[in-house]
Structures are given as C-alpha cells and as structure tokens.
Image 1 (spheres, rainbow, N blue to C red):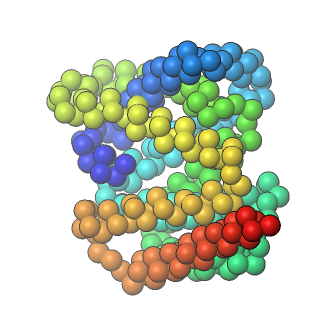
Image 2: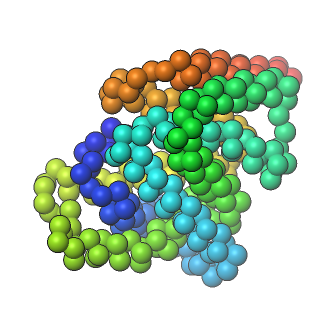
Image 3: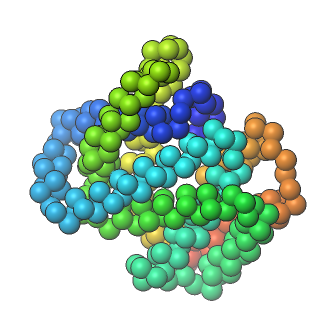
Length: 280
C-alpha cells in the first residue's frame, strides 16, 4: 500500500479516500453477483443485514472507523510520516490482543504472554522515540483494532459487511469529490491517465484485503489474528527504510529485534501445540 500510494501522492488525502470508497462499492457488487451465480445467496444476506437494525448500526460504526483509519493512513504516507504509520500498526497487534482478552474473553498461555510482553517492550521503545507523532500512531491502531472487533462480532459476512460499509460511506464520499470538482483546482479524475488508473485501482486495493481480513477475523481467535498483524508494519517499516530513505534510529532497531523475537516465540508455540494435538 505505501508503494501504491506513491502513484497518487499528488491527490489530496481526503479526496483519494472518497474515490477509494466510490471505486470499492462497484467491485463489491460484482463479487456479490459472482457469489450469487455460484449458489451463495449473497443478495439475500445483504437484504437480511439491511433489515437488521443492530447489525446496521454496528456496520455504521465500523464504516466510520475504517473511513478515519484510511484518511489517517493516506495522510501519514503522503506527508512522509511512514514510520508513524508503521508504529501505528505495531501498536495495533497489542491493541487487538488486549481486546481479545478483555472483550472476547480469550486466553493466552505462558509462552504467548511472554511473546506479548516482549513485543510490548519493543513497541514501547519505538513509541518513546516518536512522541511527537504518537497521537497519529495510536489513532490508527485504535481505529482499526475496534473496526476488526466490530467486524468479528457483527452478524454479517465479510463481503456483505464491506458492501454495506461502502454504501453507508457513499453519500459523504460523493459530497467530497463533488466539492473538490467545484473547487478552482477541479477533480483529479482525468487530469493524468496513469493517476486516474491508479485511483480506480483503489477499489481492489481496498476490497480484497478487507474481505480477507474480515473472513480471518470471524474464523480465528482475535488474539492470534492480532499477533499476525506484526507482518504488515514490518513491511511498512522496511519500505520506509529502503524506499523512502528514512533514517534507522536505535529505538527502531530495538523494536524490530524485540518484535520479531516475540513473533518467533509465538509461532513456535503455535506449531508446538499443533504437533502435540496431532500426536494425540
């Protein structure tokens, strides 16, 4: 995603997020139709969720959260706060695991607790070195963490949920792109062929990962899913270092080492318990 955003770096963040919503919705509708043709009643599920007041309110909240998260992320990348974005998604796994423990009543064994504490030490070291942008990192982590929790518990499938979220965000998105179109600078659509194509590509860049995430959130313990989220910020961290040329500070190196030691410990425990289960 950070590399993709290089293609749209001259697009105002809020306008880009609005186009992201607009181009996501048609793709979701295509997926729903394709799913329906394969024997899955996606349209029936969509109508059922739209008639469920509680599910609809939950998706309204999740739509607002993902809209805020997208805006913060795009703004962070475009203003070259790549490490702040990376830190946000390093904090995210800890937030998700805490939500899994407190809200969902999930449990960790001793080895997993050790891995969590080790990762927490690494993230704390990184946060101390980035206090000026910590608000941005925390906002990104909490908005997506709560979003995932809502998507795990709402009575809507991954595709139907994203379709409804896109529907709920469509009106403000259209209002935003209309406002930009009426401004002296005009709309970004059509001013450059490559840029326009890149903006349109925001649809699949948004829909496919979020559908997969929602599927995983419903099938996996939230604590385990949370720990897997360390993969994403590490990729962003390396892109910031190798592509955007940001300097590597000692705190960032300490964070990197601690988190991947914790990840190794966590994965080793999962594999160990799986082997023990198969043996019995």
